Amino acid sequence: MERRLGGFLRCKGFLKLDWACLCIFIQSTLQSICAYLENPFNLRSIIPCQQSSYLCTMSTGIEQLVASAKDAEIRTIGEKVVNRSRISFDDGVLLFEKAPLPYVGALANWVREQMHGNKTYFNRNFHIEPTNVCVFACKFCSYSRLYAHREEGWELSSEQMLDIVKSYDGKPVTEVHIVGGVHPKMNLYFFTDLIEKIKAHRPDLHVKGFTAVELDYMFRKAKVSVEEGMRLLHESGLDSMPGGGAEIFHPEVRSQICDDKVDAEGWLHIHKTAHNLGMHTNATMLYGHIEKYHHRVDHMERLRQLQDETHGFNTFIPLKFRNKDNEMSAVTESTIVEDMKLYAVARLYMDNFPHLKAYWPMLGRQSAQLTLSFGVNDLDGTIDDTTKIYSMAGSEEQNPALSTAELVSLIKQVKREPVERDTLYNVVKNYKDADVAEMQVNPLYN
Image (tube, rainbow, N blue to C red):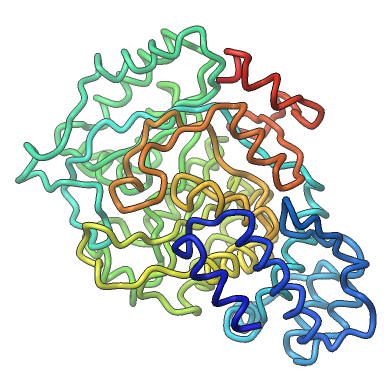
């Protein structure tokens, strides 16, 4: 087992997976499950595995798997999941500490398939990053440049950003995602004016914009309340919010990695206010750096509690820490095994979040494919090489762009059902029966 897994980790430089490496991992995973459960039945009869294509899925036999768990605490947590009972804070920590990846992965995949079947969502979107100049100095950030050194960064004018929107005229994109650094001269009214111009030009384009970190600074600088600031933006045409800036909520960690920006209570208040206005938002968590397991669960617990109250979150997006060119470069990045376990535990813990997203520009497209067997049901969008946030931090995706045909192919390769959505998860088109070869020569999908 260890030799095989070690070979998998070494293969293609660890993170740059190919299907042969996946195959070794699949075999190791199956053996690990069998050893862990001391299973009297043939696990391969429950988990059909096509060696050439994808990590196996399991939708049946979950009760037997849980009942066969040797550890009583892990077995009890599995029983809660199968019975659709909420797992506790302590349960979440125990899953990180004790649950084998195959066990927690199988549970998360079962939950995912109970909620969404094989459907895997994506959208056609593009990003606008107004600036990477920022007044904050987050230690994990490879993207921003301090205002004192703004000549090293970029600053787009309102006209330049509108030109980016216009460059997509006639293209079937449904969303523009606006997020960037916190620039003191790009204030609340600068952005309300920009949004109004975008909506005037293309009323049907969904505008998802601004992290709670950006908004907190905008509102304080404009001397308006969170409620008034959110109302102004919403009336200008802001349709929803991304989930960035959450990082890790717990002050033990937040004080070390980003102590000068909005705290957990402020972040949550801004999202709650957006929800109360009828807007949907997303939520993120930056993992794999100096945080401990209980910090992760604390973060998810705060989000889960707010979701119980407002039901305004669309999706939870774990974001992997990358260590290139930042003040935390000495911190080792998480392994792919740790990544998959994080996604699996997130799916089990965030029981009131309808969707779990793997942001492929951050993970890399093949690792993102792997998450689809560990609870994930969304891969974000086409992106179109319009974001630099993770490429500057050392992600494998240095020019993140996937055509619709490529995203559909990526999802179909792992035997999932590609579904194009809009920002609010209304179905645009189901590609279950699409011919990828035909799509690849059709300009509409490239």
